[in-house]
Every structure is written in C-alpha cells, then in structure tokens.
Amino acid sequence: MEGTSSHPVDSTAGNVMTGASGGVLNLLWDQDDLDGQTQLASSARYVLYPNQVEPRLILPTRPHAAAGVILTALRDRTSFAARLRTQVARVALATGTRAVRLPEPAILRDLVRHLPTEEYVFGVHLGPPRANRKPVVALATTSGRLTAFAKCGVDQLSDRLVRCEIDALASLGELRSVRVPALIGSGTFADHPYVVQAPVPTRGTSRLDDAVVVTAQVEVASVGRNSIDVDEALDAVTDRWRRRASAPDVSGVERGFAAVAEQWARAARQTTVPWGSWHGDWRRTNMATDADGCSVWDWERFATGVPAGYDALHLFLTSRVPFVSELASLPDDLYDNATPLLRPFGVLNQAAADLVTTGYLLELAGRYLDDDQTGAGARLGPVGEWLLPTLTSRAALQPSPSTRPGANES
Image (cartoon, rainbow, N blue to C red):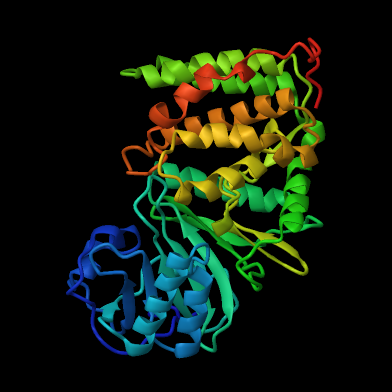
C-alpha cells in the first residue's frame, strides 16, 4: 500500500481512473481522487459491476487467484438470477472488459493495520440502493487467501449499525451450533466507525439444511434469556412507538402502528411465551450451512429482549418476498405458517404464535419507518400499505381466553 510499507495492497501501475462516474463510489473514495486531481504512484484495475454509473460490486482484475476469491466471497447465491449475475461478473473479470483504474481508498491503510503484515488485494460490495447501504470490503492475500471483511459507516444509520455489530461480535463469544465471525478489530475513520472481522466457512451447496438452521436459531434465541425483564422490554416497545407517533409531521401510519403496539403489549403481558435474543436479519444471504454447522454473518441488528422465534419468522418472510407480486399477502402467509415455525422455540399454541408474529411484524415496521426505507426505494418500505391493514384487523391483537393474566415470565 502506498505509504504503508508493512501492509502493502497489491496494485499494478497507472494513474487515477477518470472515466467513471462518482456517485456511490464516494462511499469510499474522495471525489478529487475519482476525478484524477490526486495523482497516486499506483492504481490497480477494477471491474465495476454491473456498470460504472451505479456499481454494486467492485472487483480487482489481478492477481487472478485473489480476484476469484473476492468474487466468491462477495457473490449472491440465493437465486438463479443472482448466480447468473455472478457468472457474468466472472467473465468480466477474466476478460478485463471495461476495467478501470481506481486509487486505493484511504481507509484501507487503517483496515490492514489490524491484519498480519502481508500484501493484500481488496474488493467492495455496495449492493442495491437502500437506506442502510454501506461498503463491505473483502481483503485477500495476493496468493488468494481470503483474510477479512470490513464494514464502514458512511452516515448516521450505517454508523449505528456498524457500532451494533462491533458490540455483538465482542459479546457473543463461541456458540455450539453457530459460527460467528471473530472480531479482528475496529476503529474510526473520518468520524465514522468501521469493523474488521474474520470470514466464516461458507462452503457447501446453496440449499440450506433446515434442521441445522433451526438448531442455530434456537441457540441464538437463548442468548441473554435469563437477564430479560419482560415488562421492561414491553415498555420499551410501546415507548418507541409513542415517540414515533408524536414526532413532528407524523403521518397516520405511525399512529396506526402505535395503536397496534399498545394492544399487542397488553396482550403480551397476559400471555406466556419464551423471550430471548435474535440475530435481527437472518436471511438466506446472511448464512450458509454445511455438515459442520451453520455460519451466520451480518450481526448489525442483533438484539436481546424479544419473544423467541423472530429469526425464524424473518427468514420465512424474506424468503417469500421475491416470489410474491402482492405484498399484502405476506402478513397472512406468515401468520398461517407461524405455529410450526415457532414450535422449536417453545411457542406451542396458535394464540402464542399469533402474538409473537404480531410482535415481529411491529419490529419490522418500526425498522422500515426509522430507516426511511420508502424514501430509499425498498420494496417493503411502504409498511402502511402492505402491513398495517392486516395488523389492525388481526384477532391476535386480543388476549386469548386460554392465556393466563399476569403470566409474562420468560
């Protein structure tokens, strides 16, 4: 790396790329560097995929071994279309089609200080436009050994998520059935936090082993269970919704969800369900299974103090989204399937499953509203349209006659 002789990042010769647009590249590079106003002694060639205007992947073209490892590390295997895009990117790497020159982002100097002294190559996953978009950097040695991933905050929301992931990785420790990335290091660059973490095994087929996943989710749900005060957790839920509903220029959507949250909390105080923790974004793109267990990454939304089973519901719902044309069908579909999904977590009857499902959907709604996912163009962003009508009409909002008043132990 230029100016860091003990941790060089491999590059070929050349000047700063001037042909590609800035835009999303500014998440990691200064515009002056992209415009070629800052001349570096070395800049390597990269493929910006699918295009230079709005790239989602930035992949090095050399060395070949490292480039292939980085593409494999950053690829999406969750659908045929995603796997096809990976193959197209692989061809672009092999041919060097439309490769451009980019300088080393300044933050790399900080990231590699947490790693053994070696020569590194980097690639970047930027993903589609969304509220929590942030760079994910993959670092590999020139010989093709994947060494680390790093996430970099770029705004208030992504800063919060990166800090949450740092705390989660530092506190989780070793789990029996879940492989969690080891925390290598963290720090601050340009007033934004970053985290450097070790890779977890992702080998195996794209087909998930359901039994392995359930075992892993149940173990995560047990984390911190004995420290939870359910009444305090319920108060926190209603307090968050009251604040949303009383914010300036609030819409009827927030008030509608706040009313549902009040009803839900009253029902939850009269219903016995297990409480615990959840990963927070357990979806197919954040996990891999093999004969040895389940690898799970992206712990930036990990939280303790929720009814057990949220992760199973989230995996089910997010797996359904690409295949439904009418989003309004998602909530009822989730309620209809919740009982078998939640049984491994100790949620044993329909009333309890309905209660946990409502709590999860409220959590999801709050997240999308807080993050302004509608403004970011996320498909699930307009929660007032596809989710609120179902929640306000569900009988699950009222306590079941079979539940016991005051039974809120975890």
